[in-house]
Length: 244
Length: 281
Image 1 (cartoon, rainbow over the protein chains, first blue to last red):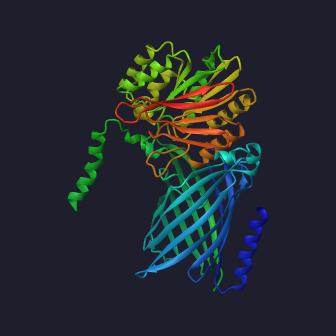
Image 2 (cartoon, each protein chain N blue to C red):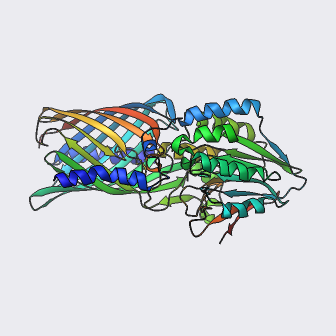
Image 3 (tube, one colour):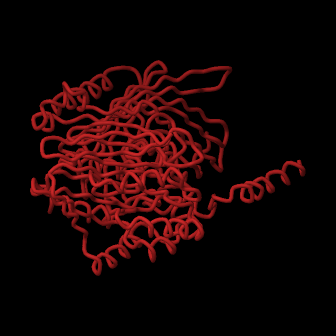
């Protein structure tokens, strides 16, 4: 599996260097604390993508540098996005596959579909996450009957995804600041009943480079009317785009 | 425009006055968070050692129910009567036992005083914590995170009760759960975990489960230590799943005001372990 991931990433970068589209690389550091990692965590994400003819193909990985749950490879993804213009307004349709090997015994897989748009100060995304937990190869060796018994996999087909934010400046402004709520940070996907609050600052330091910083607050139990603080994280990132 | 502003302002006030059982302030703040309740539970457990139930047979059953929402208790009474059967070693009520009001707790305490022959074990749900309900729960029923052991000639079975009333197990309880599983998994015949929140969900829902990071920690522990059952409630809608060695069950409610109530009976034996739902209709 690791060989396959390396080949996919190399292939993507190879195509990107020869083709006439636009290469984009986003890297981000995320650090925070929550009830499963009270001593804190530090993750490094790297996400190359390649845009051509309104299509964007991407891949990505997030590495857990501090207190990994299982392995340093926290999650990896491949994804595709299609830009569409409807009545002179741009919409994006995104599909992604995520694999999180959070345990020696179980993997979390996410099949994500998102539909997003921006309008002046507002940014909105809705979507669905189909979450699948699957026993790992090691677990199947330990419980070989799981496959035939149908207990090797657990599916949750419907998990509503959303992200809504309001920004001080219009979308084409060189810098912007905004607040919003969402149940996903792009790498993990909570239930629809667990919104996280976030603030975001972004600055286009040049035509090809954007810096951003985000601060996220996580709560638990809000939809039960019995909520408490769950965790927080801050994320700082750099987005670089090649010239066309 | 002014009219709309007035309507918007009046709406939450009307909702608050209509729904006697909602604690709106709880959506933002819990008086005691999961770690604080866990520390109080540990302190209580230091003077109340874990219970061992001795069973002369190798086969026995334990009854589970949740979401009784006392107030009224006709259906819960039926479960209590079933728990008085000699084959039932214990009754576990997995949260939302009351509606959080002091008078609900008074009713529950009076009811349990009539059930001397039943080994009952409680853990709070979100409703039990409404209106500062922990101040009522803790002095009356003690720890919300603990374990008990059913000892049979064929081996010991461990039952771990977790508090997920405010939407999270919390870091301290997760550490404690890991320690308990580590210490028992090689010697225990069967391991069962009960808590209020459901681990999995079925379709779009309005009730919160555990945050996904905690779900993943729990799934890892259950696979690693080969937990037999994880029992929850909260959703009021039965759901049964299996992943690896573990059965994950969401129980129906056991609430007079709703249709489809039932309780769960798990039969523990030296050869096998299985479960049945018993309708209360």
